[in-house]
Image (tube, helix red, strand yellow):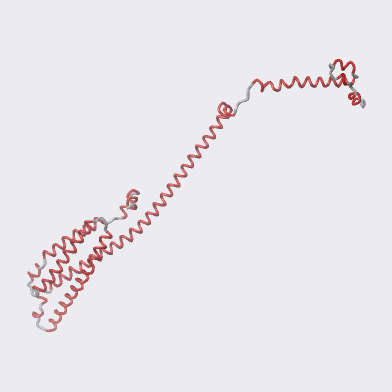
Length: 286
């Protein structure tokens, strides 16, 4: 066995182009055995190769599109991908809708609270002004009635027998005259201010401002009439006192009723606004 490599390397160059049969006649027995073994292995490999490649040579390889659209596995994969994407999109849209709804609700709540607070402050101030108006008007009417009553026989000091009674009547008369002067001064000073406040808190409401103008003129006329009556008729009978300045007073009460009605119609009630989101939105957009 140690002579095999020597025998193999001693193959003459002229025998390289000879057939295996010719070489076998000249080669030694061991060389011929190796040659036949190599030929057997080569024949086996040659026959095995077509069998391995025959399956792939007869059927063309499918493309990725064919695998996706022509096989059940590919169709299922497409359904899973599309279904998952659709569900994801729907979930995102629903979440966005919830977020937008929460933002709108939070904005509506904040706007409602802010509007309610602003309305409360506005309403409180408006009520203070209305209260001041009626207090001034009531004071002026009361003081005017008092000085008209000063012309009654009961306020004539000469009708009382004693000086103390005469002094007491005189003192009461002076006090009523002072109250009238105070009311008249307050009325003159507050007319312009009250008119501006009414116009500010009742914008675009001419029935309120017109009603106030009527009250202002009629009250001034009644106070003037009361003062002139005390000057022109300091000693009047009971019938004269009852009829003094009656037309002016009736005119005043007529304008007061119209003014009060206009104020009532112009008021905003918050519990009516909160009844529906539409009313609340309309009120906030004003």
